[in-house]
View 1: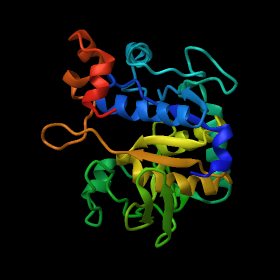
View 2 (view 1 turned 45 degrees about the vertical axis):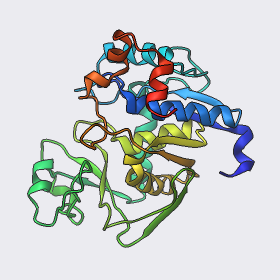
View 3 (view 1 turned 135 degrees about the vertical axis):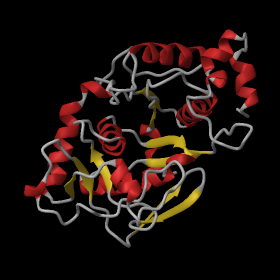
Length: 281
């Protein structure tokens, strides 16, 4: 890590209230707090509640309660405020729209009418595990007059063949090639909601986050986001990607693993110290 930035270190926790937090979240968030304490910085909690169809207020309340119970402490967040409020993404829409308009004016994005089904059925759309299918570029050269009446998404025009490299503070040097490892990606969804990639970049920049600590499953997302930082004229933060917690079948934990949620473990009488030891913290 660049030691010149240590004095102003700002880390963050950025859960989404779409379900109960599980062991994987706890492990990553604990490492985020450890990084903050190592560098004498501040920890920020952001509620990423943009997905209207999946986010629930009861999960947002449980999220704050379970994080506190696990031993996490933050100085800014939706429950305590701070200089970069609001800390609920659903209340930050003007910032996302301004970023979208900036990229539109620079011709860095284009409207796309393709559905997920359209992309999956395209012969040139290989699958990459949990990642979205590689977009085949169907709408790249379409005239905007051809847009469907039922709306469209905005996609970022990935610079085909460009190497996106960065030094991860945990996993070392990482590199991805645009057009090979990922294609043109959605920054604004058809339902008029900013996509994760754009909202994350806008908020991390606005909240002056200096290092993003998150799971290794988001390494490719980091490559995409570096392109968005550049498009918006913003210096990217440092990155620290954590190893994932896997289930007995070797799959990363997800919110479907209710038995391994912090809430379920707490109700079973497990103590935070026991849980931290179980995930090697």
